[in-house]
Image 1: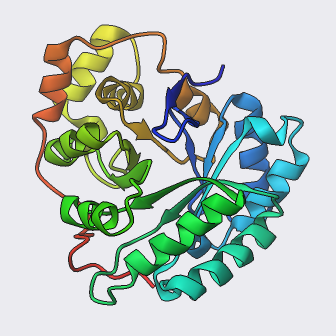
Image 2 (image 1 turned 180 degrees about the horizontal axis):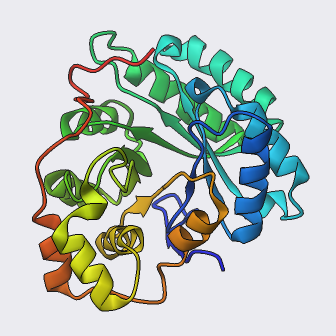
Image 3 (image 1 turned 90 degrees about the horizontal axis):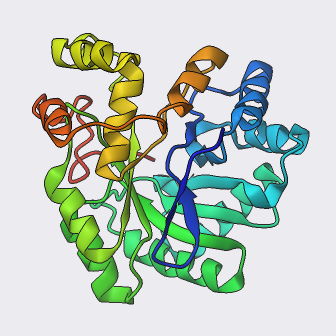
Length: 276
């Protein structure tokens, strides 16, 4: 079983659900990623700051799935913002990933106080032109930050990966993305370390559909057209997470889940949060 794909505005495509790898950073992590690829995951999400690009590389080497069938994402850390710094950081990531090309390269956080994300974006456009990156996007960017990138470079990110779950559905940002043809990716799609999966509306709807609460929430993401990237080292849970394309939610169910909105859970306001 593999996820269906969405077309990106640059002509490439992205699976409708991927594997987050934060914390998968040892031999067990290699095994989990290899197994995930075998289970049908094709979008693998890592970052320079996760410290596990080498683990992802080893998993890709061990997997019998052809490299061209995988979409490997990594991200530029805040301490490497800047035009020349971005080139150097990317080559470090590409070397650790042991790849000829990276499928999707993102600016991890905007770090507006440093004010170099436009310089990094210009460098990423050059990487795209050189063919060592297939698609470029951002993570944790606000509407004004996205607009600034577009106004100053003329290049629209294909993806913005943001905190998104039923407690924080990000409807205005999603609508802005839709206007510009930006695909929304969801980090922490299940709002881990919260009570989301025990919410009565979630457990009740899941029971009625004969699915798990996690499957219900991941299907909610699919109904919204966002790309969730849940992480799990547990094989049964990974298979469960991927098995969300055989049922659908009624519009009123989507609305009921979205009505759980309460805001960000972890204080990662892009206007003030800094990640180096």
